[in-house]
Amino acid sequence: MRAWAIVLLAVFHLAAANPATAVVIKLGTVAPEGSPWHDTLRDIAAAWQKLSNGQVTLRIYPGGVAGDESDMLRKMRIGQLNAAALSSGGLGEIVPEIKALTFPLLLHNDGELAAVFAKLGPRLSAALDAKGYKVLTWSSAGWVYFFSRRPVTVPEDLRPQKLFFWGSDPQYVELLKQSGFQPMSLAVTDLLPSLQTGLVDAFAAPPAAALSFQWFALTPHMADLKWQPLPGATVISAKVWGEIPAALRPLLEQAAADAGAKLQARINLLNDQAVEAMRQRGLSVTRVTPEAEERWQSLVRAKGLPVFVGTRFSREIFDAVQATLLEYRRNRGSGQAP
Image 1 (cartoon, rainbow, N blue to C red):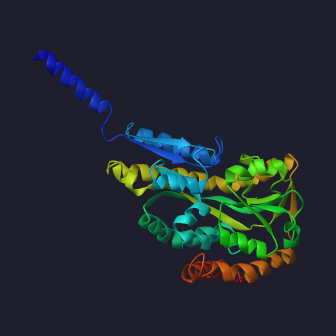
Image 2 (image 1 turned 45 degrees about the vertical axis):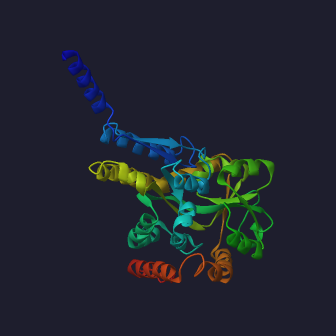
């Protein structure tokens, strides 16, 4: 009997060391290893491991090995992945309303983006939650600029160049074609080889992404025009989140939010540093004058507004974004209407 008691005691000790509640979370991201976004996810993984005493392990699949964002969402739906770091493109497949925040040339700076998120972020988080996705942290990759083989100042400069278009969106692709552009609909993981083979001549991305993925090496020109912000979020399946012990969830959520806030505080500096690093490697930044920017604005108003508002996202969310911007600009003393 004493021998059996010793065996049972050993089993109990093993159970304590390897709790039945242990959860392994598989997270996909297109961010390459060594990039700021990948480093942030690693920080979250380390914090979760420590806070949970090994009960929660975050396993990261970087660099698009789990596929593009559409692929990652599909894998989350069937349980092959449990979480993903997504840009507004991927998030927009779940909740189209987020596309209102990325309408071209609508927002102009980080203060405006922060004001819009402060007002509408809880609403967007709730909409994602209703679809089965728990938001761990919101963030932004910065501002999107055009990179191209030949200089771009006005729309006519971009139209002859084959423009990378992330993912498959027939309505948006058709809009670009009707506006005289040559969109090439591809997965983001195909961008570098497409630049190398000449299938693509131009793309739109934040400078830090252009540097991290080494896309800029084949597109030596950047137009100094803030086309749109690129917000994103790290999300986890609400079902898997519910499998984590309830006492741990607030701690893990706070750790993820803290890591995201730390990254966000660095984003502007990272993008400025990326532009300087690319300049030193041959990147030429083309100034876009106010007159040239107005030509882009006119194109967006004439072609974009009728297609986007009311179809790609609701008029109501677009009006809410504009109202927030108007209030923010009035408080800042700007007379510029949204």
